[in-house]
Amino acid sequence: MTQNDQTQLGKTLWKIADELRGAMNADDFRDYMLSFLFLRYLSDNYETAAKKELGKDYPALNGNGGKTPLSVWYEQNSDDVQEFEKQMRRKVHYVIEPNHLWNSIAELARVQNDELLRTLQQGFKYIENKSFESAFQGLFSEINLDSDKLGKNYEERNKKLCTIIQKIAEGINQFSTDIDILGDAYEYLIGQFAAGSGKKAGEFYTPQRISDILSAIVTLDSQDPSKGEKKKLERVLDFACGSGSLLLNVRKRINEAGGTIGKIFGQEKNITTYNLARMNMLLHGVKDTEFEIRHGDTLLNEWDILNEMNPAKKIEFDAIVANPPFSYRWDPSEAMGEDFRFKSYGLAPKSAADFAFLLHGFHFLGEEGTMAIILPHGVLFRGGSEERIRTKLLKDRNIDTVIGLPANLFFSTGIPVCIMVLKKCKKFDDVLFINAVDHFEKGKRQNNLLPENIEKIVETYRERKEETRYSRRVSMEEIEKNEFNLNISRYVSTSVDEEIVDLKEVNKKLIDLDKDITKARETHNKFLTELGLPPI
Image 1 (cartoon, helix red, strand yellow):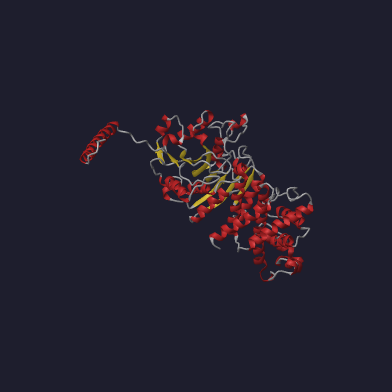
Image 2 (image 1 turned 135 degrees about the vertical axis):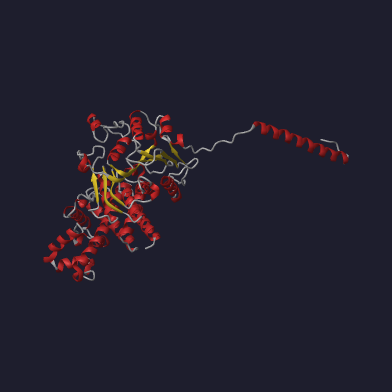
């Protein structure tokens, strides 16, 4: 399948979503649409594994009445079903009964079967509760198939679901899909739903282009980025992971560079988005043993693996990426001032938890790791407790690079943001400032970063290049003179200097011009006199 076909699948599915959701909120319909797409993936994966497991015993053709091959095998081999499912739990870590497979559900939708809704509910519950790994537990918990938003009663809801599933099945069947293509379509839909969600989109989605910048930065050698990509990242963390797209981008980036990732870790507070992230991981071929996504509040830090008091057992990460909520209001207790993440720096103000999120991630960054976090510009210059935190990070030589991005890049806010790159142990004494505010493509609703804009940022970071009105390496002495204010325009101004006017030169030109005019007039009057006409 070509890249164009992959994009077309996403567009086809989005058109279906746009037509079918009617008055339903984009966020609500997103959860149904993406869950059904995920069920399609789980079913395809399961049937492929079942075919391999059963070998020659796997029925060659569909049975009568739209039955799947697995349905036929279950009917013919009822005594062997228990052992078969035991093997499937061991190999793919979940079980789907034949009547819950996507093709079975799609057939019920096609014939407008009255039992479709109940069958779906049973299927979701079975996958969640009868699977082997925790990655599947509660996966569909927020998908309310009894919601009034689908219809006033069972019949209306069942009819609506039949229409939705039938249209999705028809849309997908136009394409020869595999895991990468479904994964790309899933990501495309997440982006489209984010565009329709406005400010709420910030809860679960980082625009792809910005994600590309962060993933490129953290996969480069932390001491000397010019050496290129790392060959291995043992552990990667996003402590505000949303739909997981940032983590997947890091994985994709290092895989394309011929490297490997040990395990992906993410944390997400919103339960629906948490489920979305787990689906996204599985849909992109990340095995349930290769990731751990936790539902919880990052600022409270109740995740056992991150709450280890013994320094010898502390978990550290080779790469950390994050796009936490901007200037999030929080209410830290007095005791939190003694929390190991904040104790050496002090607490971020109640009005803006930006530095609380930053310090959380920074605490778990490994000595040879890189952290890239998206923040509002205020963290660069606000005073009070934020100034104290910023000053300590600078004095400890932990802030490596500050990148200013254009305004209006996000669905959730129009404000300009920055990327701060931090390291526990860095090679360079200075701080690199990149002012990319003027490098973008203007869009109707929001601005976009073009591939060349991203490449310019990444290359400037990689080579630590200096360029007039774009980037500059600034010494700690200069930053200290500016009272540790990191406002980017202080160090890299994008304004073009006005040309200095030489008044003496201007005056000389005016005198010369006046002489030329006088001479021309005299010549002109001479011609008039010769013609017998009065001079001017």
